[in-house]
Amino acid sequence: MSVVTNTTTIGAIEAPSRRNTELALLAFAVVIPVFAYLNVGLAIDGEVPSGMLGYGLGLGLLASVAHLVVRKFAPYADPLLLPLATLLNGLGLVLIWRLDQSPRIIARYKTFTPDAPNQMLYSAIGIAMFVGVLLILKDHRVLQRYTYISMVAALVLLLLPLVPGLGADVFGARIWIRIGGFSIQPGEFAKIVLAVFFSGYLMVKRDALALASRRFMGLYLPRGRDLGPIITIWAVSLLILIFENDLGTSLLFFGMFVIMLYVATERTSWIVMGLLMSVAGAVGVASFAGHVQARVDAWADPFSCAETVPACDQMTQVMMSFGSGGILGTGLGQGNSDLIGFAANSDFIFATVGEELGLTGVMAFLLLYGLIIERGVRTSLAARDPFGKLLAMGLSGAFALQIFVVAGGVMGLIPLTGMTMPFLAYGGSSVIANWALIGILIRISDTARRPAPAPAPSPDAEMTQVVRP
Image (cartoon, rainbow, N blue to C red; front, top):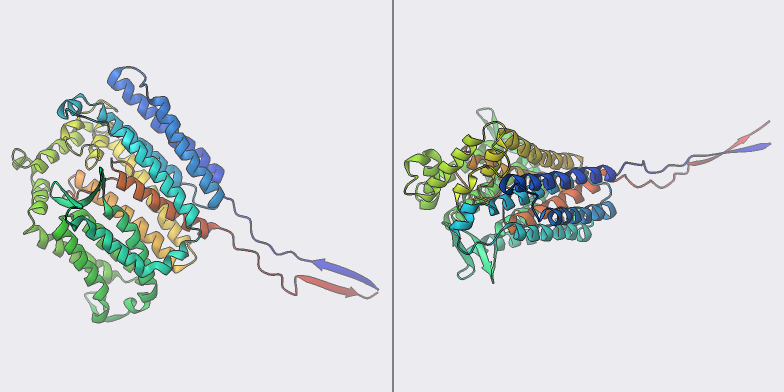
């Protein structure tokens, strides 16, 4: 009698980590801004800018640190998110430095301080925040435990600008707080915290919110008692708009909630109701809020009030910047977008893109933003848990809405909102918060793409067969 042993080994399927792909893309994400920096210097002074080497080394060092942390602590993460964010951040630094070199801006402000070095510092803090998210947040599902704590934290962040002595009124909008010599925009961080709260809340309540009571004009309407959440968020958005005169933040938060509500329930009626409520709220507040009304006037006919209202004058300059750019633009460093004046490198920095890089550059930047949004949505679809799906979709939706309201406002599609273009515009709060957002998306994508652990061997894994002669 002979004994034949047949052993079958069951293991986890190996999946490519794509970290080398990310490294190659990061190299391009650093080289392209360095060449753009060189282009600006040659256009303005006719010589290689003295700070180009330091800029290239600084951006490369930040990108290398971020890549090494991802390679070590999130090896299966999406390989495109980090290079895309690095490229946008690097090009934003170039555009801010280009506006710093404008003789008109230097002459206008007698005690002028260049903003590009500060933005480089904010970018370093943003990368540190990105690294902190990946080191501390080992599993995104941990955030689900803090659903209602996130709600309280978000409300505190939103109410801080209204605290006397702490909040600061900047051109009619009360969305800043001043601590010492620093200004912080809490709403940029509140959007991330609110996404955590919405994800945890909707994951529990989605079955009840998906129920419909009646059909009206082809739409299944939700039950009356389930309208409480959307009415509450709508009311909070209106309060932000009324007391802080912040149209952008109110639209962002309410829109993010409606998007996540639709993803959780798959009911088109929530989208229709959300759009109707947002339009009704914006029209109602604009009828008696002077700050919002001025922005609506500047959007409707800026040339009629350009001599009396600063917002109208800025919009006329923005429109002429886009008109001067044409298809290919005037070239980096050769435009006149500095005539926009205040906030040329923050709220209106996209006008510099339109003038100096033309329609081609505008479409290229929108494509880069669209790729980040697409990778976030893909991460949501790949996530294995409902909380991760909702959180990734909420963060991607908030990012997309911010791009829409900023680009739409600057290009005249909608009234100005006072928000800034992520990674591109000058501002510490924005770049730090958006690097944290990218960090969370990378953590979710790493969990979603990570191979499942090998199952325990079953009794049939090792079989012993007795063969009789």
